[in-house]
Image 1 (cartoon, rainbow, N blue to C red):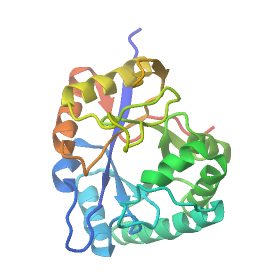
Image 2: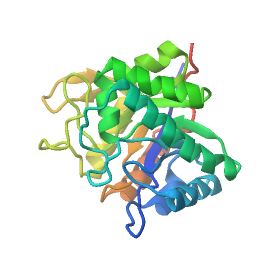
Image 3: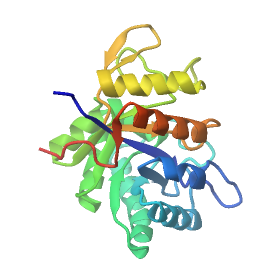
Length: 260
């Protein structure tokens, strides 16, 4: 019996702010199946949130909240010494902001994916992961929690009974423990489309990724992230979508199992 493969393609969006435009949201939306929309802390503002929600609905793309640390200058990619209680409060606050726009436009908040440093911190800090998970559960218990594949965030979500999606990255490299290579280190980003696509297909079909050290790491790929602010984001999205079609891999917003 031939094994079937399915995956979600997600993209971080709505990360412009005021007079500053970032990303290729409108161009990328036809190629992805879910959008993670910034909620105003690391990027985004009310007008950007509304506009991005409307664009996602027009393209039939699943809408997710993308809460981050309150760090506009650092784009939410700098670690902050936040307590679990502070993390809970800031995630509830941001979910509420985006949820208001989603409901006003007649949509549904499909998922939640923490952003940047908050995402990476929660991947290895169980207390922080539990606080974020609790915030999602209290605000939108039907939502799916996107987290780094095999991370503490996924474990916390499953423990609480949330639907979860193990996320992998098309344009990032990995360390032997399954975490992402920090952006400040050489080789953290993959700029070559062919390399990124080959990594994605292998993660989906074989459940493995080659770490920078050369080791193979086991990984589960429910949803693949394409960074919307990357210089090659549009080309990656187009080529990955085309390759997955050629490989017979179905692309949809809910390829992962429900919570136990």
